[in-house]
Image 1 (cartoon, rainbow, N blue to C red):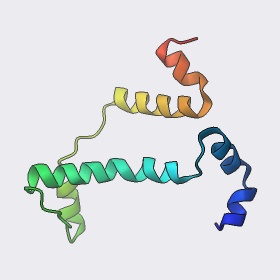
Image 2 (image 1 turned 30 degrees about the horizontal axis):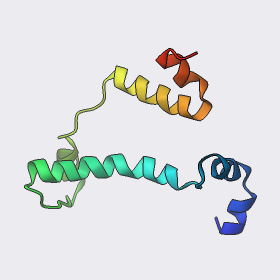
Image 3 (image 1 turned 90 degrees about the vertical axis):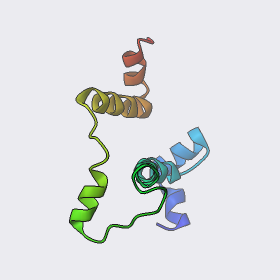
Image 4 (image 1 turned 180 degrees about the horizontal axis):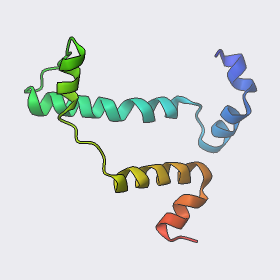
Length: 97
């Protein structure tokens, strides 16, 4: 998408008006958690050395250091994310009416 197309997109305009920035927040929300986990694994298990596994099995072994989220954590994360988008779910989950 070029800048002209972004200006014509109503969703992007609404986000810019409300928060003052465009779609860059989505890139940060998607990219930062895996980056933080990657750096934590490198510091904790590889003495700070940046590790780039070469094959699929090595990647699976590398990411096996991260435990999967519990159902409660996943539901809370989804609820807060959807609540941030709509505004109502988050208020109800926190008991703010």
